[in-house]
Length: 317
Image 1: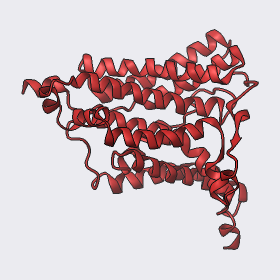
Image 2: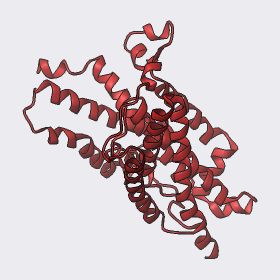
Image 3: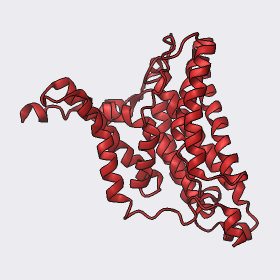
């Protein structure tokens, strides 16, 4: 029992933050997108695209900041395809997202062979964003909270700031209220002279930005290379975090921390060998938690009324 309790230390909490970041970013992206009425299961593919291009540009320039810009830019462009398909072409949102996930896997594999010369994993980058880790004076010395929140790498700091900024944007600004109106009462929004299509485009592209940031974090900050399929289902876990968080940025943030905690705990349990089980069982733990949480919260959470509803069809009715 003592050995098990010893696992719950600052290293576990630090690992929780580190493993939560891509899920936090993607889940908040899902919140923005789905509050506008667009179902977005393409986040897994958008994250892969962001991770790939951030790595390629970092390898080419030896500058992770340029790699980050490239990763986010290409992720936004890739997410734009989903916006065109679901908003302009009125295709089924789920079908569009599923197709984009498949395209992302095939596209990155093809480009790896074309650029790197082989599939699988790229060469290691020489300079990663991990090297820009910065301890904020005074605040980083606070027990427990200091190492967790004030002695971190760039994208982790950016994530904390974005959680606050997006929460304010969604609840206190015209843009946020218009995005939410597009997912709740699109006809009423259109009656006011505000384009529902425009709001949904903005939401999908913002989601692409956040997913690109998440993918870049995996490849050039938390890691030092790109590996095919390296997102490992985090885009889908982010959807679950968004649902269990009640389609709110803060709720998605807290749910993502829970998933990150489960992931961090399974790594600690594997390393400690306190419980003698195959490694695959421990790896399943975060995904089992996902199923439990979605099953528990999906009945309690109320999705946006117009989520997944094509606006032109609704308008014609």
